[in-house]
Image 1: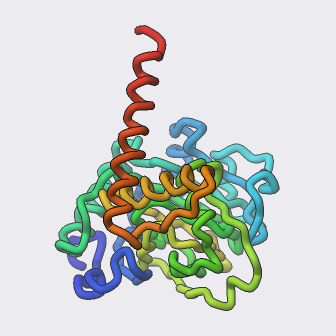
Image 2 (image 1 turned 45 degrees about the horizontal axis):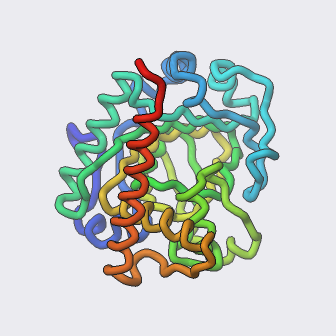
Length: 290
């Protein structure tokens, strides 16, 4: 990995990208942008909606409204992360030019090493997770292609196949894409019996296929990780079909999931894509005059 920040096995990537999790390597553990003082500065500068933090000792299946706060500020949470029992995410860190440059470099290396397997990267976004020892990230899913890079500390990620309909029913996917309220999903303890349990150590990264359900348990030290994400034409087509299916289900129709019928999928995307564009056009027309 001389001179590189990210290392990916092209054959592994070709076999598993957006299908199953796989490890990658990285050289970010000593990078100055991940020093705690630099992260305190970032937490202060990011707009409030892009800094989320709460208590870290959570049940796997906690509901959003049950998530307790710690009473600390964002900057205090970072400074005292070793003992304050917190979980924090700094969202959309590419808004800061230094972190934006780092995100682009990492994703450019992913694209170069992954070759034709990696689709065109759209909506590049970066997230930094800072968590106390033993903190839990509850059961949830994310809509992006994601490589989670473990910078400091360790964690264990429990993941499932996104086509496992016991763990992730079609109706949950439809709700997630159509009326997003929170990323957390309903949890049952029996789910853990079928999980892929993947460890992460500093210098390792983990690929998350789009919309795989997962939860995370930190190890006995402070954990710091950098999530480099993007969307693609494929991920957006999938999202549009699920939004269409949610609308159809409200009409009493039991829709086919994405991937079952190329014709139906393309028809849904065309119809509901046109409807969404019409709504955006009307919104712009009826908006306040400048």
